[in-house]
Every structure is written in C-alpha cells, then in structure tokens.
Length: 263
Ligand SMILES: O=P(O)(O)OC[C@@H](O)[C@@H](O)c1c[nH]c2ccccc12
Image 1 (tube, helix red, strand yellow):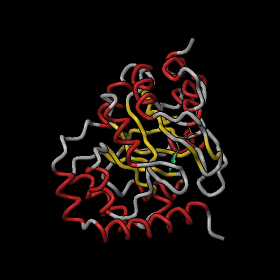
Image 2: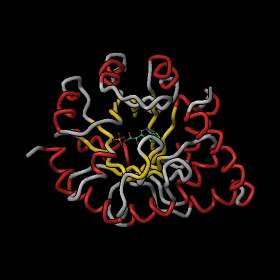
Image 3: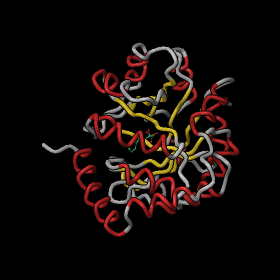
C-alpha cells in the first residue's frame, strides 16, 4: 500500500516536472547565483549549541496528520518571534498540497529576521535546489526514505555547488547507513514515522549511539517541552527541530524562550 510519503513524492515529481518545463535549470540557476550568499545554517546551530539548546523553529500552517494548525498564520510575525525567543534557525514548509505551504512564506519569513532558513520540502531533483536558492533558502532537506543513493548524491552536490547546507533526515539504522555515504554531517533523526505518523523520542536517542564522531545530530518532531530537550541533551543531542508546539502558542517569543531556557 502506498504510504503518505509515497503519495507526497509522486505529487512532488509531477509538480517539479511542470515547473521545470516553465523554467529550465539554466534559468533558475542564473537567478540563484544573483542571490546574496547563504546565511550559514549549520554554523548558526553550532554557535547556539555551544552554550545551550540550538533550535530550528518551524513555520508550518498545516500537516497531513493534524490538518490546519494555526488560523492566524503570519510567517513574518512568527519569524520575528522565533528570533526574539532565541531560535538559531528557521524551517519553513513550502509544500502546498500536503502542508499548505508556499514559497512566499519562506521569502517573507526570512526577510523579516536575520536567521538562516531551511526550505522544508520534498527534494526529488537538483532543479529544486536551485529554485530553493533562487528564493533565498540557506539550506535544504534530504529525506533518505524518499530517494535512492544516486538521487541523494546529485541533490547534495547541487546544494554544495550553491554553498547551501544540507540537513539529511533519517528514521532508522538502514537509512543512517545510507546518509553517512553523503558529505553532510548534519543529520536529523525524525522521531515521527512519515509512514504512519507515530512519534517516539527514543528514535533519536537510539540512533545517536551509532553516529560517528563529528556528526551534528538534530532531533526532529514531537518535542514540546524543555524537559524533552533536556532529556535528549543527556544523550549528547544539542540541536532540535520544533514545529507544531510553537505554532500553537499565543505568545510565540515567550514560548520559544521557555522551551529553550525554562521558566
Ligand atoms: O511539528 P513537530 O512535531 O514539532 O515537527 C517538526 C518537524 O520535525 C516536522 O515538521 C518534519 C520533520 N521532517 C519533516 C519532513 C517533511 C515535512 C515535515 C517534517
């Protein structure tokens, strides 16, 4: 049976083919090269991790499992609140059919603050990397479960060519083995299984045991309190990706601060 991830990837391939027909790689690449250089996503995380929890704060309007998460969705206001609350980086969902995202949200959020931003989307083709850079993104996500080794390597090469950082997302041992064949050492463990949406914080702890020296681990999904972050810090994890919990708060800056430093 086709999983949600399979359906997302199939829809993404069709959409990318349409866009590529309208704007060939040479054109999107030329636009990407006119951008000011990326803001340094991995470096911002490492700076914050030096003296506490380093947070990638996510801007996500809706998700396949939860539906609409926030009615008064305001990406620039959210971005400013995340920065004020002490986040290191932004993550912005741009996938439309499943997450109600939009490229415009990334552009607006990034312009409203000085944080580096990852384009959170389903990469299936290097063309999308150039497009991400053309709209200002500083980093891209590679979901190992969605790609074969050849496609992953090509997408990573395009990101390196554009001086962008790559967050490589894994969910189990076999995916981690494949991730480690890439160059990036920024590795996210998704505590949520994209096949059935179950969440288990023990995922990151278990896989952290197997990460080689020098790997920068990001715990992703299902984190809601400072106690969750403190628990993972015990396992040597200092980088976190949090979306839904922060999206639902009335005072986002205060909630971000509380998540990172407590009280
Ligand atoms: O909202 P949460 O549970 O805090 O999770 C954030 C983030 O980890 C999640 O949105 C995510 C992780 N990997 C993804 C891949 C695609 C889309 C979304 C995601």
